[in-house]
Length: 365
Image 1 (cartoon, rainbow, N blue to C red):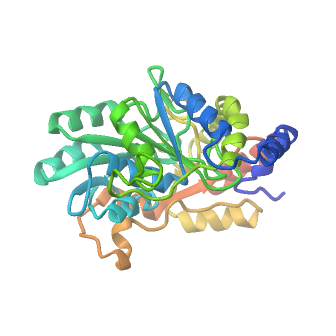
Image 2 (cartoon, one colour):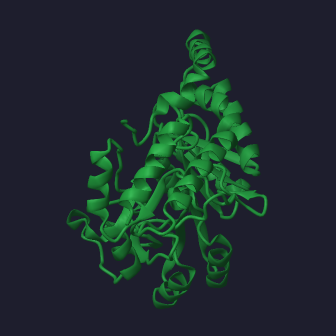
């Protein structure tokens, strides 16, 4: 059997007719940017997240960059983040002219609140913390909120992999000054192209974001806010996302069930899962495990036709071209050598899940 790491056609197949009709509707409307579909999606997505404002932008990385600008970050400011999350928050900070300061991770591979507190004590110049809910697992957000409030600084959530993850009834994106989302096709809520959004409860932040995403304009052609750019979510993507949004929680349930099966299959092996299985704070955007002999484990699965990947194979501080200040990150460095991503996506067939489980039992030792 051949098992793909992901297959986007599986979840979209049931919605094909609606998506096609929505795209045709946009084409026929003659309005392709910031029209009715975009307006309705912003409203619906904000309510879905439990907030007042959602601001559509061109990508998840743009969302983080513009959120930092809206919160007052500029050249020379320092932004705390993690180094194991693919570099998106780091690149956004660099685009604003900020210096990234890296925090080590906990056993769940997310930002460690205790290390964040140490970093803030040693670097009081930090203006904003960007916490990533990696792989769809909420970080220890309550503890991180407490650390950030004590320091009197701003908090941004990178929710690109955590659409619908919740804690005590609150969804990812609602715990901070600004929650940043990507709608890249592989995401739990993904379009058919690039897209992103920032959600916030702060009307002032929302107003600045709306201006920053379109050149810093207040009135048309009148630049009223520096640092603006062209970053817009187009009508076709908004229309597609509106159709998919009501299905996200169901798809997340499918992802969790697959991840739970893998957790059970790994019992007694050397394969360890940092996530919390079927908990509501985990939406299994990626099903990532750790193995002390990761490369051999991957080779054994590949021999059985099972695709795997590594998210992510290099820490931000290890990119020589970025010339970033090094700090010892022992937890992140160890995890980077052991992580492996297993197939997990909506529409995965029961026999495929069974086959991967069998391989985990045989190859995970």
